[in-house]
Length: 175
Image (cartoon, rainbow, N blue to C red):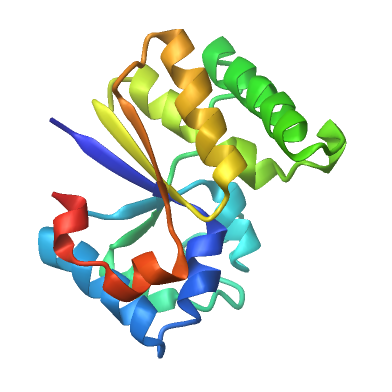
């Protein structure tokens, strides 16, 4: 079974940077099992990367080693022409807005991009299962609620990445 791990900005912020034990623990766990964390281009931009650059890392991205070592990978551009991707992203924006009692226009595009990427990977059969690693509970709940409505039951998993999770993470989390 092909499992793809999608990570959000909050994980890297919560890690505190490459010199922090939490970052090194995450790095070691992912590399030990031989998987990578995919991030949507919107997340890459939030981390300070320039998606227009010929090669990443670029700009003032604080995690260049993760990209160079291959355990953090910028995903392909989202296919907004795919009705599933655009519909799921619109529904995710509404879901998150309702769950947080905020205006839809204030919902971060990176949050909906996480769910759009999951839908795209499942729809294209690039992944049989997606694990969404996020510090954003409303986005995680949106993914677990919406994607099963499109035939992806039991194929999406949301893991809330707390500080405690990062302090105790091991390779077993990625098996």
